[in-house]
Amino acid sequence: MSHTDTAPLLAVSGLQKSFGTNRVLDGVDLEVRRGDVLVLIGPSGSGKTTVLRCLNALETPDAGVLAFDGGPVVDFSQKVSKSDRTGLRDRSAMVFQHHNLFPHLTVIQNVIEGPIQAHGVPKAEAVARAETLLARVGLSEKRDAYPSELSGGQQQRVGIVRALALQPSLLLFDEPTSALDPELVGEVLTVLRELANEGWTMVIVTHELGFAREVADEVLFFDAGVIVERGAPSELLRQPKKERTRRFLDRLL
Ligand code: ADP
Image (cartoon, rainbow, N blue to C red; front, side, top):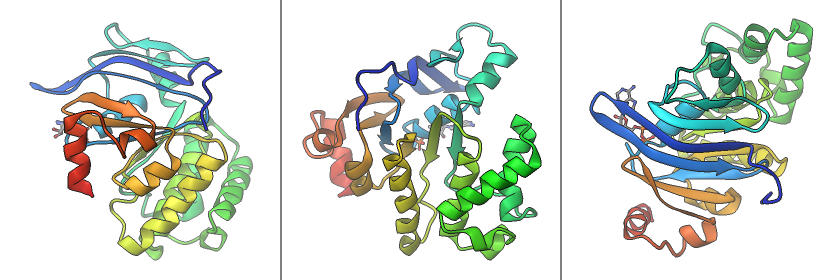
C-alpha cells in the first residue's frame, strides 16, 4: 500500500552518528509515509539498529533533522529541548530483538506499565486496552503468566502488544524474529503481516527477505552507515542496481 498523495508521517535528513571515532551513520535520508512498511536490510554493523534507536530517541544523533507530521521538527545540530525529545520519543514504539519484558511482572502488568507510567493512562483503561490487544494476538489466557512461562514466540507477541499499547504513530522492529527458534518465527511474522494489513506504519530491520518481498512498500539497503540503494522489493530484491546490494543478497540466498 503506498500513500503518495499525503505528507510523510516522518521525514529524516542528514542523520549522522558516531561512537567515538566510529562513524556509524554518515548522512541518512528517509521518508516514511502513513500506512507504509519500510524494511531495512544490510550487513551486520551497517547502522540499521542505530537508525531505529535515533528515531525512538534512544540515541542522540550528532546531526540531522527528524520531523514527524504534526510534531516537532528536531534539528540535532542544535540543542534539543527536553519536550522536543519527549515529543519525538512518544511518536514511535520499538520492538526489540530480545523482547525485553520485565521478568518479575506478569504479561498484563508488562503491557500496562508503559501507558500508565509514560502517558498517565488510568489503570482501568490501560487494562481494558491491554486485554483487547492480547486477545488479538491470541494470548488472552496468558494474561497473568510470567514471561518465563511463555515460549519465545509468545514473549515476542507480548513485546509487540506492549508497543501497540502505547498507541504510537510509528512501530519500529529491530530484528524481531532473529532470536527465535525457526519454528516460532512464523507466528511473529503473521502478527506483523496483520499489522501491515491493518494500516500500521512500520520500519522493520529484518533478514527475512521472503517476508520483506511480501509486506514492504520500500526496502532500504544499508552498508557502512549509508543507504546504498532503495526501492520497491520487487526491484531491489530481484534486480538490484548496485554491486554492493547484489553481493549482500547473493550471500543471503
Ligand atoms: P546493524 O543494526 O546494522 O547491525 P548497528 O547500528 O547495531 O548495526 O551498529 C553499527 C555500528 O555501531 C557497529 O559497528 C556497532 O559496533 C556500533 N555501535 C552500536 N551501538 C554502539 C554503542 N552504544 N557504542 C559503541 N558502538 C556502538
